[in-house]
Length: 123
Image (cartoon, rainbow, N blue to C red):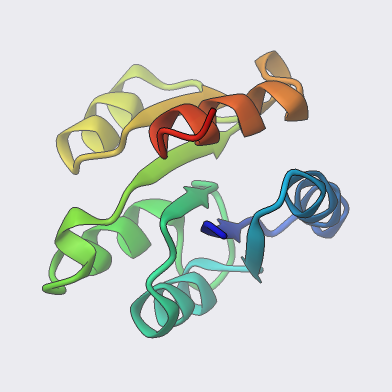
């Protein structure tokens, strides 16, 4: 079973994603901010991390930067899922090795699951 970490401060969306990924057979870990996400990622080593950008305590960019400083984290698979549509941010995340940058409003949850499966080579 593949393990996915969802780092999202919107509890409603976090719960919806948790349900959707669980229904698709993933073990789901959740975090409400980048600090929780970073701690969880470094402890649990998920197969994939979905991370929002704008969050309290630690944003997604800082979380990604700190994750990349870790031996395990430097190769962690990350998909950015956010409402922030900024070319600078997209470029920065892709530079940090994010696999993809998805705008929440453009991506229905089933398509987000498909993208995650694609990244993990799950048919």
